[in-house]
Length: 195
Image (cartoon, rainbow, N blue to C red; front, side, top):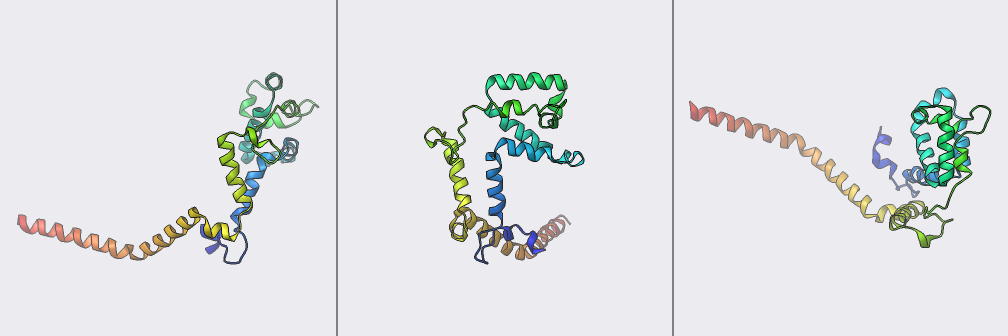
């Protein structure tokens, strides 16, 4: 049961980086995987397993659309309208082969424009302020080790609050009992004065 407590995902007493680091690194790297690789992964999902992953397809579709050139976007939308009038309700239609042809989303994948994602393969001189902040945190997570967790002000705050909360919870029944006694005493004094 102790493994379900959030602090065990941040533990470093074994001298290793915390478990949560692996999950965070994977989440950071996923959007920067090649679009073709992400598309292939989605195509191999069995039809009965697709429903819970619909939001993943929508996120992929958004990423591809954001980087596509204008004429590719128009061609994609025209193609999707010919597939289904309500294609936007079922994003899986965009990533699955249609009528013996490649998936419609490949139109946009093959026509990507310039992107400014702040990654190592991008020119950092044109990054926006938000990208610099976002990727500063990404670099910190990738280099996360025991000392980072120990010296990080946010983790120290979490550990302090967690420790204080657990100490306070030990005294909570006594405080609650005191409040009840005080309330009953006040109520009995009011009743006694009225009588």
